[in-house]
Image 1: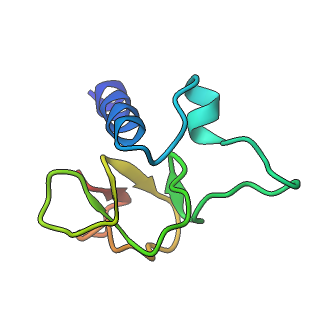
Image 2: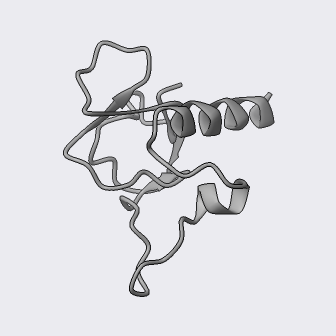
Length: 89
């Protein structure tokens, strides 16, 4: 069940243009530019910095959307409403 959930999240995020589509390592750790990863801290898979993210299929107004993500620290986009470590579930 968890593998399916993660696969769906990778697919949704990739289709919505929030991350590159080129293998699971690229999804979790995008290529470095000038030695730095361009990810918002606290989310796996990577969410590239944006003014806001909302859950795909929800009522948010973006500008970026994502499927299920693991919240590993702070939650600047407010995706983990029930504070269980999973956003957009």
